[in-house]
Image 1 (cartoon, one colour):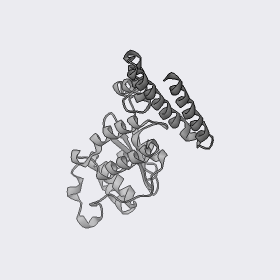
Image 2 (image 1 turned 135 degrees about the vertical axis):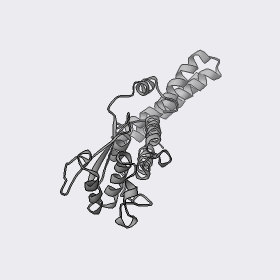
Image 3 (image 1 turned 90 degrees about the vertical axis):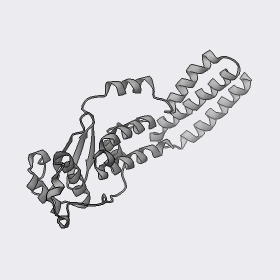
Image 4 (image 1 turned 90 degrees about the horizontal axis):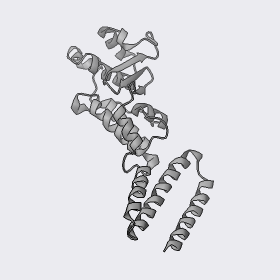
Length: 232
């Protein structure tokens, strides 16, 4: 049985080596991580079937961790520490918005026009309202999200025909992986478990049912899908 297992491992390694020669180097780390996880699970299964449970359990745990089925001790510790100052960033043509993960506070600045590089916090409500006529649809949606946090009752003073209220968030172009990482506040190479946890934490702050922004919640959902594609 041991000989057969050794032959199986050798065949898998040869096939993997042949595949890796023509693979994109960016995907090698993730592929090697998954391959190692499956090999460890296979070894754990063999040890368990032969009665060596004491050796199978740690191998199964490490394999499941590599496959992001369970959080690793390091990621669990990071969640408990909750690195301060972590932010999500969403950028449109006319403005940039940041969300503080710890407090849920939003900050933004104008990127072009008469108030270029001016922080939104420095502008009064009438001035902010005047920007709706200058912003594109995506920027206007970001401004709405900011005003919902800063001035929750601002809509009561806006006429329907002023163009400042929208029933649905505007559509935007395809999201890049870099943008998705910025939205979820993650570093390149984040695992599926990290992506899912970051998405869940942000949705608690942004979901429309919790008084958040429909537009930002939609962007967070898209960011999750973009990043999880490479883990499927």
